Length: 112
Image (cartoon, rainbow, N blue to C red):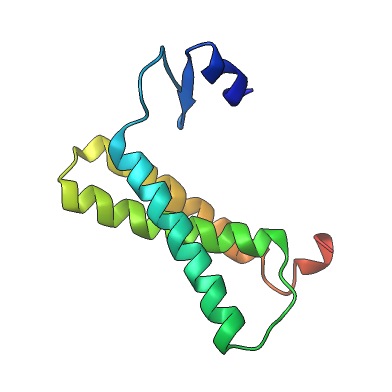
């Protein structure tokens, strides 16, 4: 839905902000870009230097949310953003805790 709306000049970004043809804030793009790089670096390092193991999609989401929390905090602190933007860091942190618990061995049987 979001890509189709973008064609018509409307951008939707988290947390459900609608921008009529405007751009997504630069600091949020930087945080996501760095989180993607950090996540793939983690998995590349793990694949090359640590034993290969089966990966569930919930585990990938867990690692990405942890990376997004860390990179969002670093970017927001380095740019000196207003305190209202840090609500997203708290939100990402809360969901990374939830996905960490869910991706544990006890709950993996639900995702297989």
